[in-house]
Image (cartoon, rainbow, N blue to C red):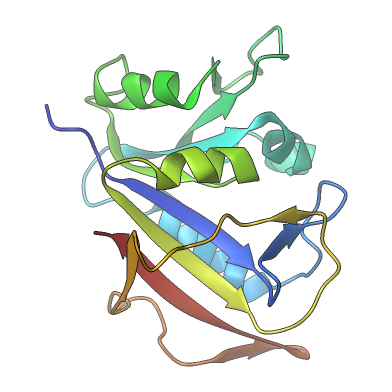
Length: 183
């Protein structure tokens, strides 16, 4: 079976910042709804997998963990026990083996990487990768940043029909959706 494409879902502000002190520094309900739609929607009776690092897992409010209607895969070398409803793996390669060749291979439609930095970096090195970027058009103080989406490896592509291609606004924050494919 061919390896499934890796899809990255990330929101980054003007300085490529994605987080501060283990949380997202802005609140965009429309973007969270889009995140849920992107990572949950399937075309058949399968589910999608969301792959995240330990810090991203802990940044999700406990009442929302695990993310419903998705296979939650957490990468960690320090967690000793797998939380209920989670597949605990030690590496990105182990996560990819689980969804491409392992027990989830026939049950996963699409793979979505949802953070943090090191998991994004590994996913961007995967041979087949798409990035769904919410570009937050504002400045925020951050301590965690998105790896560079280099023009040497990625090209901007048209947004799918279901993803708005016009600038959005919520409160005083403007944002837009962009899609990049690895070439």
